[in-house]
Image (cartoon, rainbow, N blue to C red; front, top):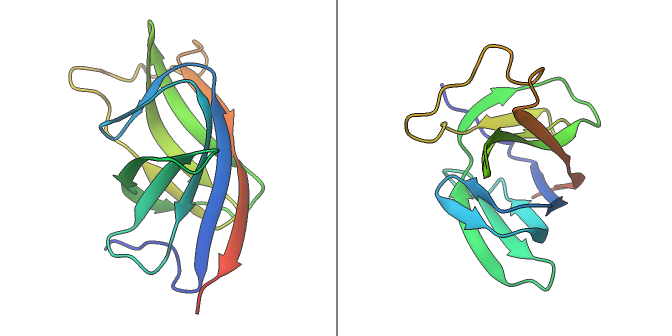
Length: 131
């Protein structure tokens, strides 16, 4: 069963990419971004903007899973040579995580994080109630 953010929450956040990264088909150049994830849309869509509010992408949320509520908010990025691909959006502040498919032909080594192939990019997140 698919479940998104609870009907009473929305999340907004900010992150900075040191290098270009692909996220569900969108290419984000290095820079500072903000995103919003509204509970009122089905399927859930993440709107990504530059800090000056220029819309650069809208991506579906990916495969949903619930995680422990925490302050652990991050983008998990797969690093392959000079290519970076968002693998997961983890929003511990709302107890949600969204996993994205690997690039075509890519395989995730069993010890990817230990080998430095997964990069963790912190996200500053705020959560609000939606009525």
